[in-house]
Image (cartoon, rainbow over all chains, first blue to last red; front, side, top):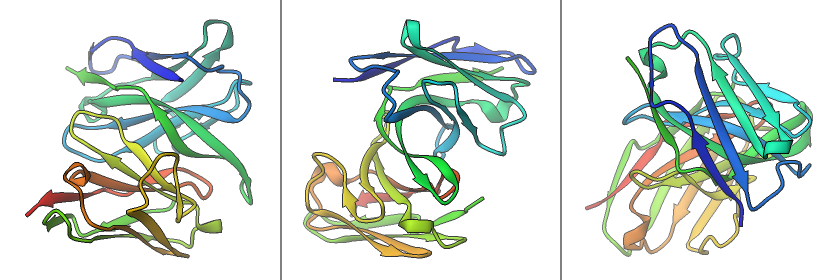
Length: 126
Length: 107
């Protein structure tokens, strides 16, 4: 049974860079059927997709965050990571990592639905 | 970017009732690439429906999805106590976006 666990600092100062890691267990991060993504949720608000990556390092970023986001994958450690630069109070949120299916669509390879989620980690910018 | 608008914001219903949640897309969704999730307080979302109408693994058949193009519906028949939660739609036609959510609360 696949399990995802986020790790990283709980508090980030304004203008600094957030670095989060998600460790995947119970499944191979190299499974070509999946992407691995980040979704965030500000307190009391809705969900926002941040970015996704596959085992080969192919990435998809939310256009509204793309200038500040970098994802990477380390298959030897079975983990993937998120960096978000120039943090502000608007980036305060619970950050979830999740496994994501993908499909070939008219837009090319398209990450689709999130079927397994980590428990989430609350990140405060202050 | 596709914008998803969910309605109503809050739905107040009694256990045993039927819930009908709507999700409207700003542009037609190719191949009806739309999913629904359930989220309870303090927990991660759970995938319920994908491709507009296909139930995910182990999802009870009282949950059903329908719709096409720009208008989609999640129906929950005979609400159980554990169904009171927030529901989000998500599109994946080219990029990923979520609706703002509908809260289903106990009346």
